[in-house]
Length: 439
Picture (cartoon, rainbow, N blue to C red):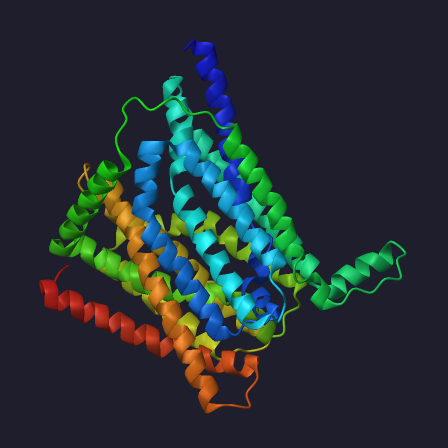
């Protein structure tokens, strides 16, 4: 193929990759995620179960999706991602509000489709774009491409958070209608599916960008079965290395504890904002503001990593998260937003530390598999925590039959600090029993 053609393909793939990542990541229902599920008529127990199903789907499909990408091609996996995203939004649009068993069944289907989309897209878009640059002799541009993608995705996330929360707030929508001279009054229940419809439009862009990408024919044809066997063997080898090596084993234990507990709260954030009496229109502003912490937190984490030991850094993050969980358990009106800053910072610092320490420690021939195992382990543990939370809500509701949804939720927040502390001490003892004292 001529050099000019390779250049054109590289440019097209980079543009498509950028838009694919922007519209796949920035979803309009994110600022009202938990609130939307509850407004549909689901309970907090069902919300926890659905999150567990989503995490389990990703765990089960992560390795097979990688094998399919190697054998069928990455572009086909990205097209499948677009199709899955379109279907998951359509399922929510047709789901009946307060639909009982039918509603829950459709949400289960939605979570499976969403998990499948996440697994199919995992790394395939990035790999396809990089390979096209490499084929054109432009791999040196990759750092600039990633910088632009992260910047544009952050901007798209900001817009989605602001718009998603605004269109879900009946007071704001009615104020805009009055501003334009309309006498129509919109009820809150009429706006439940608006963020979903907007995300459906985004999913069509994702599918279009996947179809627009170009991938060179595979040089060698290997069966899906052979690739699955190879991927499985690599995963087993990586897990054995982690199990036998004190440092990465400890890093992953810390990641599983910190990520699972904080992420469980983050999925419930919109319900928490409601409980502490913040207006719905502010949810997007809060989410965007917290996301902007990602500009500063990694630099702070880098300074800590250069100065202190991994044990000291994880203890520092753990103490911060524990203080944040204690603060949010009080559910203070308005002021309750302050302790959540510690949780957002904690999960961002955890991501930096885990990525840095594993990349520095893992053998080069196993690095990609070890990093993939990180995602598998954290998602697996998050799924367990989500199911435990569903059980906690059921237990609280059984003890307080007359309590409303908000009261049950606030009661559940009080369990977070103790659970996190017990979990942290448990994994510390597990590591100590497995390897003895380790610095």
